[in-house]
Amino acid sequence: MKRHYPCLMFIFFISIIFCSCNQRKQQIPSRPNIVFIMSDDHAYQAISAYGYGLNHTPYLDSLAAEGMLFKHAFVNNSLCAPSRAAILTGKYSNMNGIKGNGDEVFDGSQETFPKLLHQAGYQTAMIGKWHLVSYPTGFDYWNILPGQGDYYNPDFIHNGDTTPVQGYVTNLIIDDAIRWLNQRDSTKPFCVLIWNKAPHRDWLPEIKYLHEFDSVEIPVPATLFDDYATRTRAAHEQKMEISKWLAPNYDLKEEMFPTKTHRYDDLWRNVFGRLAPEEQQEFLHAYKPENDAFRKANLKGKKLTLWKYQRYMKDYLRTIQSVDDNVGRIMNYLKAHHLDKNTIVIYSSDQGFYLGEHGWFDKRFMYKESFRTPLIIRWPEVVRPGQVNTDPVMNLDIAETLLDAAGVKIPNDMQGVSMLPILEGKKHEDRRKFVYYHYYESGGEHNVAKHIGIRSDRYKLIYFYENKQWELYDMKKDSNELNNVYGNPAYKIVQDSLTSELWKQMKTFRDSI
Ligand code: SGN
Ligand code: CA
Image 1 (cartoon, rainbow, N blue to C red):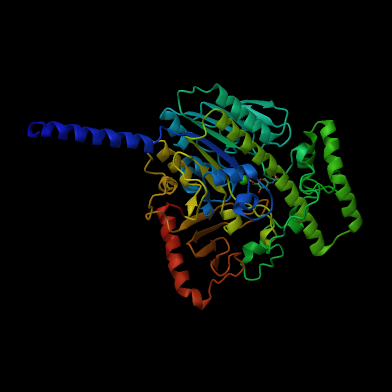
Image 2 (spheres, protein in one colour):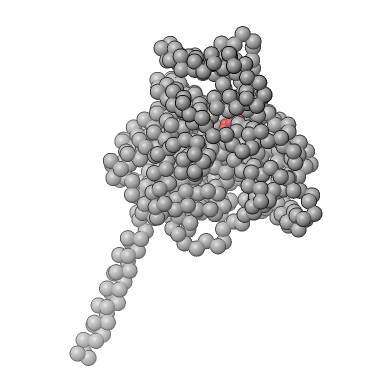
């Protein structure tokens, strides 16, 4: 027996090594595929899994039920192009060069996560709204909407050629994604960005959803009639109140062919003109009974605002029904092709949106509805189903998370934090405690003043630096951010420490004002 002892020990160690290798193999899946669906201006309040009771989005809710829903996902700069550039590069606006919409051209030679995945052997595709002026780089295939794109019979740009395509934009984007998935090389992992136009202004529903919500009263937010009493100039001077700034034709479809001229007339003629004549008739018919009643009622004051709120919200939510249907289509595709287990499916938006909170539509401010963005991640190989996460994560983290998940080295100059430990359910104490924000546009269509700010788990400090005015919110006591306590002696210590943290963060991210 003694003679065999070394031999038995050898077999014992070999089997331990073998077993642990096998276990490791089971724990770390092969490189995951990535389906990244992003919508444009989709408020988290308009996904039923977030619990606001405005609409019903069964497919998005399933994603959340089968994965992780993030309640505190924030953006760097609540505007389309700056958020997209941050998502692609993992960097703040000052580092990736896109601070506003349209003024700057995205430098496609910089490092982006699709490019790095591509170099690591992924097949990559980008389909839908891009909005970064220069053409996409780092993709095997791209097919994008010009600028903001159109809802009805939109143009698509592929390899520099613009072609009109018949159909409704949200369906067409998924059609094309499925077409691309069908012809891909199935020996390689893939990453496809499916970036919707919906539910961006001017909220044009798919014809089949024109009557959705007809007999429903959409709940009104508590702050619809906010008077900005404690706020600084910026909140008073914005141009995004539902009561004042929605165009009667373009936005509200209340007066399709106005007699007075309005600054949105040309825009309206263009979008309506894209419908086929029979669709135009259907469209006009759908709104007519309500419009007739509206004219008769001759509403004024708060009643008029409430009417506009209902009209705005119903069209906004109608466009989201098509988004949700198409999330269902892509999930059914993945399931039917046995791709649903080791595919990371991300659903998010380029930023949040005001659905009547503070009386507003649009975004831009660092107040919660537009600073936050929806984020849901489903990845059955790694993420336990049905989790709700409240860590402060950012759009900036997506690049690092996906590179991390794919086993690709994260460049040192990316400024986000990988969410992989969160997804894996591991301890992650070294994550950010503050979220830094910078909105750079000045004046413009919605006249929101430039600002920087910082959010801790309880407080939010905002500095409107053009106006040299500060705001501070105690979100624990004032979750709707109505009571600016800046300058209140009771908050002196908090105010001072957050102010110095703000300057510190600005320096860390190499930003300036
Ligand atoms: C358009 C909209 C604005 C919106 C910006 C930015 N006006 O200019 O209401 O704030 O886009 O949106 S519209 O008359 O053209 O509809 S973003 O999502 O692209 O940043
Ligand atoms: Ca947007």
